[in-house]
Image 1 (cartoon, rainbow, N blue to C red):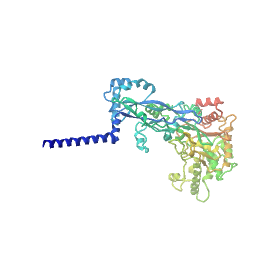
Image 2: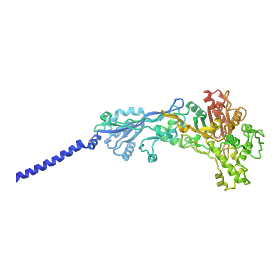
Image 3: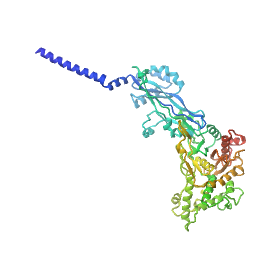
Image 4: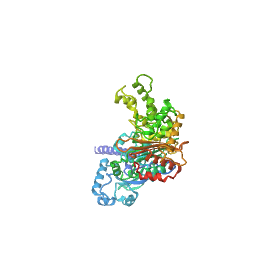
Length: 600
């Protein structure tokens, strides 16, 4: 009996032992999950952030690069028994700050790493790196921030900052994570998918104290980060620097375009700021200061500010009138100031003369002929048909809608249509006498400086344009195809010759002769004194040069600077001179601009 019991017990022990041995064999040999879990206890996953793509100007000059910084990361579970007093002394923070940052890290995750101190400089990192071994759970992740060799072009370049919760929620790619950096505005935002690159992962072997001992399995399972693609901009950084120099202390815009391609040569918003202010650890504080500035330097005037075009718009009225056959180049109108106010001693001009002296009654009559179609006995119906015809032309000149420049935030401006006046006055209850201020570029018309630079490019090209753009090439690729599409205005090329001749006369002998004329360069331009109900008028000017085979088209607005023949004409001609000659010979005009006393 006893022997039988011993035998049964022995069998039971053997069965239990066999089961345990089989389970151990399965765990250690057959099932890799347990092996991976064990190995994860001695490995640390370190993300490797990619280098963001660089940005160059059209001549190969670097305008945006990456500067190394270092984030101090923490894993709360591993950061036990930290010598707080020594830590805060080493990293120059208070014990209250240490406690708050640690609590924030725990709230994010007890087991996952998060940033404890962000964007330490190379010098700061060098002073602490030998002491990190004494603080388990803390480690360094290298990163980069944007830096700028020349402190210009801030509004167009934009800036990079840490992604917020709203952007994370909208990220359909699921690429970004909390703590990542993303382009917030300007080129940085528009070309984010190309600039960002792709993060990598490195696995490190650590000891029980969390100290890195080396690569896990010699880096066999590491993935390398992929740098972002570099961008070649259309901008000439030397011209950009000069334009910002001229606009110092002023509010307004300069936009310069290469007519044959639509490439933006310079895009200046004044007042501006040093783009380095919105990079690095002080970004938040600096952004708040810029946001509080009453001169609104964060407002990108070239694409966001909307002004009446003023007398520059008379060029478009003349071209539409010629195309519709309501005027001929030799058509003359008396300067009847009972119809609309005018200026200067002139009368009975033809189209060329009317543009040269900027005769308001001439374009009043031209616009009236376009609007009053006289196809029926119903004046209101004729005006509505004429208004729609006119608005269609104006939109083909790139006005009243976004040009689709490669910058976020572009405004459309405003070109009123018949439907607008139907709402204001009632259908069938308005006519030309309600809208005649449009004839001279006032009234409900609104344009951006970019649109007016594009208008100069259209006239320089004798009737077409390419979408203005700031990026010439991405990586090693070719030019972007969407910027090689020709847009036609619907006005025949032969009609432009009289307008171009008139614009040359404006500079040679008309309102632009005193500050826009350049020796040995045939400049074609048009001044504009833009009415401003809130103070001194704005100074406006568009131009292109040379007259034949134009290389540059420019629009300038200077707020509260009075006549277009003063500030805007002077600045535009200096930009043209700088681009075409490489240096400024008319130092008197440059001094006049820098002094900034335009309304006297």
